[in-house]
Length: 429
Image (cartoon, rainbow, N blue to C red):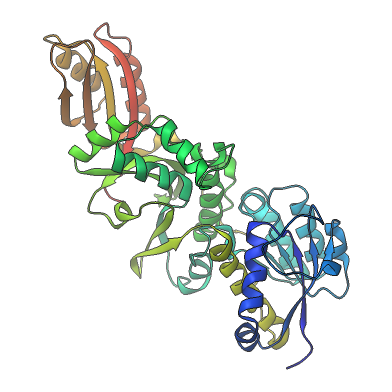
């Protein structure tokens, strides 16, 4: 083989340690597949004295990430430090220096992906990002390459392991959200500040990346409608199950009549759908293409070794291209599909109300639905002679604006104590 390819690593936390572990454990196999030996030349870290789970020569460490990017002996840069600043500028500087870059940084790609891809295209270098979405599950390369002959129609995914774990535990044990979240934090599945996960922001970053790629349209994270799972109760899950549904935090990107829906929110899905069986911290992404039909990608969506696996796979690809020529350069998204406002999306809805138990209540509520063109599919009433009782509706398909108007009217009825929850029902994922 020719001389080794030198790699600069920005970050040596969870993912960076996984990358180094894989490179060390499988060095010969990786070299054979890449066509060259791979050596780690420089590693940027925040704290030189921090204990690390991987063996690493201290002479390689630096606290200045710019030393890694500017080092002329570094052939390829891997960015796994996370966040936007200074990651975005470091990636741009590496690309501008003609170095291929591999990143697992979902936030920087969701916010600055098109501009970084444009820069990479102008400089004639590759920008790889398989590890940015769904950890070890291959989804970026299949969308870029394996499904290139298809017009992608929809992507629907469970792409946040923390929320999937929380909803799984709530479903199995009937535990309230706050209690399960504390358990997830104790087990290391949730951060001390869990907002990015439970409010849906993490999934929004990821679906913005997937939608931009699949639909060739620059999708900003600000374009993604986002709801989290903090309002979900064990009662909602129980009533949904009675109706034949399981609840998941879904990330959805779907083209319809020349416009794009991109949203993240809890949703009930049919218990028979493959996504309903995805439990605990696992992720899955359901893709529909016009030629290939329906596909599902399933596996561990985060973690040191799964995400490290995706990063090293990109590294092997990058080394091959340095050695043997060719490129996998993506042009920035060229289409300009408009994003459909959430008020214009169409769905079925689960609506949970607390109402007084007296004759005529159902008729008053049904009348308010009817005045706003909301058709009712099914009704569940729980409790008798209590104040209040639970009344649950599932609607037929209706535009979001209509259901909002109906609920605003219903919430003002004297017989209605509370609109407890509104959850979309994705009958056909």
